Amino acid sequence: MSLRVLRIGPACTIQDQGRASYLDHGLSRAGAADLIALHEGAALLGQSSQFAALEMAGMGGEFEASQDMCIALTGAPMACAIDGTSAAWNASHQLMKGQRLSLGAVSRGSYGYLHVGGGIATDPFLGSRAVHLTAKVGQVVAVGDILPVGQGTGSTGKKVTLSDRFQGGTLRAVRSFQSDLFDGTTLSRFEQTDFTRGPRANRMGMQLESGGGGFSAKGQLNILSEVITPGDIQMTGTGNPFILLNECQTTGGYPRIATVLPCDLPRAVQTPAGGAIRFQFVTLEEAVELQAAFMRDLAMLPSKVEPLVRDPHDISDLLSYQLISGVISAADKGDPK
Amino acid sequence: MTHADPFPLVRNVGLDGMLVTFADTMTETSNRAALAFRGMMEAERPTGVIETSTSLASAYVRFDPLQLSHIDCEAWLHQLLIDRDWFAARLPQGRKFWRVPTVYGTDLAPQLEDAAAAAGLSALDAVERLAVSRVRVLTIGFAPGQPYLGPLEPGFDIPRLKELNPMVPEGALVLAISQFVLFSGPTPTGWRHVGQTAFRCFQPGRTPTFALNPGDEMLFVSITPDELIEIRARNEDGFGGAQVEEIEA
Image (cartoon, rainbow over all chains, first blue to last red; front, side, top):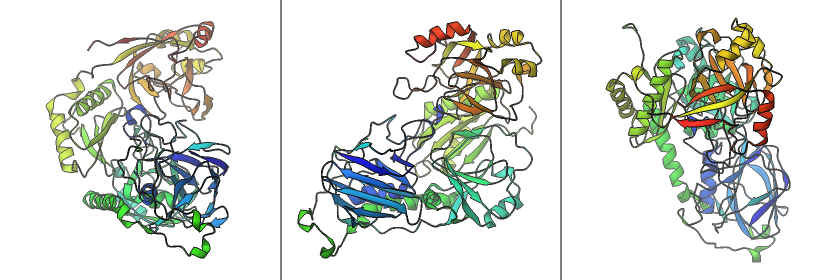
């Protein structure tokens, strides 16, 4: 079973939750930029959140199904149609053999996701299917590619409420080991500054801009290169912040003023160019609570899925629909882990 | 060391990491301490630890704060720190010694003369010294599998270039600040390109994927460009004619 790629945006890659534990070999995690979207897709299809999906930055594509399959669409909303009939976002659908799914540009946010029942079944590398462009592990999806689809039925005709994370906002951050390289005045000015997301953004990091002066560390720019963790807010030579993401280098010599909480990274990465961002420092204790609540919410997603109610007049091929479809367990044999 | 020395220093890294830093400069002893300490973290690995790594003079642990609290993690690290003098600790076991055939200078490595001049040496003298400098993998980073190697003798403490080298090829041996880097892929760099090897640090789809581990040792043996051509013609394992042996613990 597979999806044939007829048209594709310039920055679409296969992603799952990434590969941890290769930091000592200089390989960062990679994995979906928006973890919420990955979990929502799994919940909509009633399958494991370990499955891989197609991550689409800014622009989607057109895909033809080789067999009947289940799909789900999550993340930044995109114009979306199946054989010309518009289909709901943040929902799961049947895609019948020969049908074409067409996804346009994002209407808000940055990263949209296409999930399939059984997951996208490319060959894993070091325990993950996540493409890592800077490490030259895999590459962007191209026109003519055949995306293999794994075994598994999945549930369709489901929706889940789209959370509000597509226009920037406040990102919670903790102080990190280099925060003390910045003086107190700089740290409070950082927290009071209105930033906008700059034009430079990819899976490695995203640039922020602000009207005021830069944010420079005290004197010492010759600090030893040190470990980077996704969410680190790095100050480049000009004092402009970059939020480092899942595909960042594993170590770096530019000082980092703070680290965005993992639970706020989906909001960070989904901020469109020009979107407003502010930072709020929280204590480590508050951060642990916020992250725990986020993980609980992700685990609760399957219970938040509702039937997708459609007006039957909108459904051109009602009789071909499988109105009640099977649900597989998260630990089914199709699980890639 | 004076009584005001803040090292070793334990600090938080974001929400889910801690960094044990042994010095604010890279020295043989601070790097040794980081490698040895990381070895002990790996050996003990309490529940909640996700991964560990080293940088030049620090050891890092990432953990799940919902399984291992910050207080418990920090207490564990301090307990390990007082356990021994990490600056005098033995390096972890299972390290390897690599002898890698290397062309110094020529058009394959065009910045040897420049680097030698910066170190106040003739090109010939520089090669004589570099080709017998047994260096350690101080850390791996920047790109997958890519080692930082050293320390070289103090004479090679030369600055990085102000203008980036637009591109050096895979297997390039570059030099700055008394360290080598052996590039795992074509990259622009501010380091001087002094040698060229056929050694591949990172081979996706092959076993082992990563040739080197932190703590391994390397020697870049001088060969001629013709010898490198021969090595490249039969470089099935991607190790560029390197000889490897286990280092006795």
